[in-house]
Image (cartoon, rainbow, N blue to C red; front, side):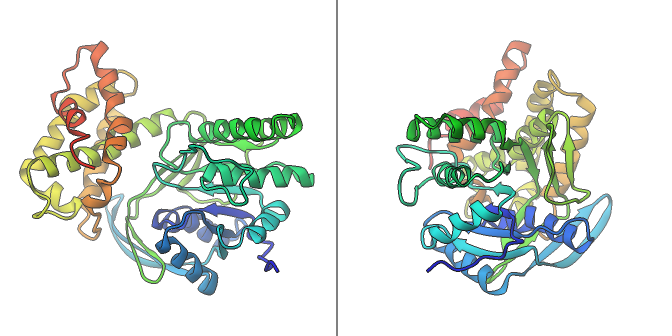
Length: 377
């Protein structure tokens, strides 16, 4: 027998990551408290990871958790603890699919996801499986059930750090739908015309989890969402913005902040500091690592990005990034950033090299990082 989930949990959040707990769910909580919205979140654990299942069970029991913000923003020291109460319930997809599907069909209006760098990998998965293995497979199966019920389309707000993430997710789902339901042209048309697939860009360092559930994060935050006709957001917050063009925000985030993280990991490993330095704040305080990173950013990255973006905005963002990296309160582990390192190099570093080459800009540091990317897992 399936259990009844709260009807007001119309934002279905795929993922229990500390990032989502400290970012999207925090914005929804603040919007609720300010009386700007009344939608709450259903958290869905989609993978087989025991840590995620444990957090989902904790959220289903207590439905609120602490968010600790520490650092500097706009020249002001911030040390605040908030109670996030936007989560109405949580469910583990593999264990209670029928409950999830029934709620998704009847009550969902918005979908939020953060399924990490490998979350868009489909492989040989099928939405025809009783419980598909991949996130796109699960989403396709749920959307098919919703369409077949005659319900309205949804707004999808993916938060994965993937260029054009909304359109990429749309392509994955529609491709699966064409393969698994080749004769259901109405379903394909519904996906393409009745659902809104928004490209989004997220920016906040959520450096640690709190037990049993919660997060420690920096005060800085951004959720930029590319506007399109009919787009209605599930919450209102000063750090949630609708923009005409996401490109400048995405390029700065991916190729300054995220590239800096990945390049620091490259040099951290290359210089044998893995047993000496644990956190980003320690790496940025190391003169050799800091000076090398700043040289690469100033001489290779910013000149390359300036072929597409305004240089002054790049330099302002660089200064913000370095201030955020130096936050003494955040234990942002270099080992965490090092996960999926080769994939991150390809996404974060290679496009800058591609911009530099036709402009005649030398990129010795970035090229060295690309050559070394496959040396370690």
